[in-house]
Image (cartoon, rainbow, N blue to C red; front, side, top):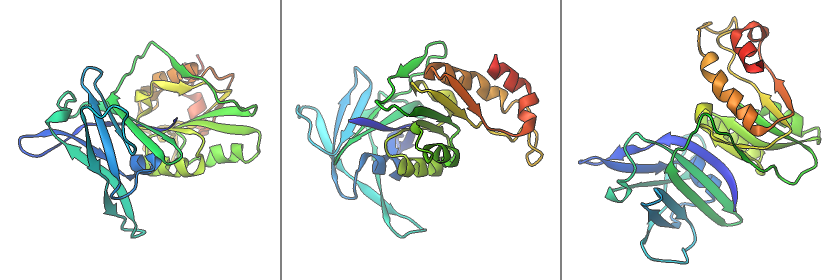
Length: 258
């Protein structure tokens, strides 16, 4: 199965006494192809600190239990959007407020979600192979809703391979418009696995340098180290940066170039 989405968030809590809670909202469920009232099979491997949810049975049925997909009605469309809300001592190897990575895989009607503690190594690059496509492969950092990425793809010379975006609603648009790409939804400083590409398209926040923003300090500098790591991990031959003019006179840009 292909990795469609990687989302990073913190374990929440539920009940009294408080127990670890896995709350997978519609972005994750729809990426996996989970539907309302569908039965999901869950396997827990405490030694590997890994939880697997999927909509098809496991070959080994030992230590497997099931839940059904719930839903929440959208206030805008009125549609039932799928979600999974499960909690209990069975997830006790995960700590409340601990960061976890939610990896969503899908192939046809089969969907799988693999949950494990977030792994991030600042001084180690983790690069995944690029797809078999002769076009220019693009990684988009701070992709937004993908307007710039779409402009590149529409030329038919570029292929969207991976997008990194913090906002969940923007990630939903990216999933819809780039179904063959991989989306990372979370803080880019938590992104540890990057696709090998030809070009990195970087559109970092401009609020520190724009006249329309508050010109607050350290916003960009906080992101430069992680952005540099991502670009290096991608093995990109070309860096395409889009930003306001003031950014290119900043220490953040000089550090990024260095």
